[in-house]
Image (cartoon, rainbow, N blue to C red; front, side, top):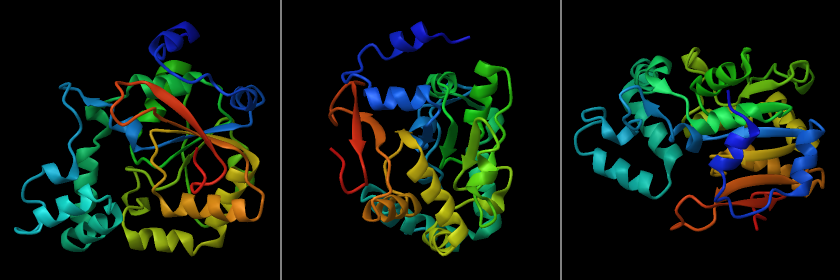
Length: 262
């Protein structure tokens, strides 16, 4: 089982001191971890190979479209790519591809997920569809972390009955119809007042530590901006590389909204 000394050794090259406000929030059960796809990308398959990317599967899109999609990916236009794939492949084939790519039984949770499980967060939020965080939590804590899907009927009050709570913001592989992937999926989410209230409640009542996350999701960005404008936002933190060329050294960015990172 992981110990605090194991974690300190793993992060010995970390360049910034952990902010006192963040430590206090964790100790007082006021901190929530938001886990993004950067954490899953560190995982390996059981054959020790990196996880495949969408552009790596030949024949999945129409001939002649692959290069255009790769260029859009390189430009960061992920929602446009996802929308095009959804329209070309259809719901059934796309869902099958996602499930095969992120087959829970074929992927090993990373040390990062195990380290997150050690920390006594009040709750976890993830934009990932896989079950890797649940498996890491079970390995470390010897108890289940039961996910809740975010939908129009999910309330903050319901969520807080769990300790820790675990919110799968963009769906779960076990329920393919719940997966939020393309631009229109986000528009549907953003039109749900209940979903907006749930996100706003979390970001206004808790300090959020973002790990492996790039601040690219429309729902999260809009929630942070709404709360900042209303002066109801807590201070949140983003764990990131110190420099694009750094070799694993990290730094902690503190921000009140995605427009104010420093």
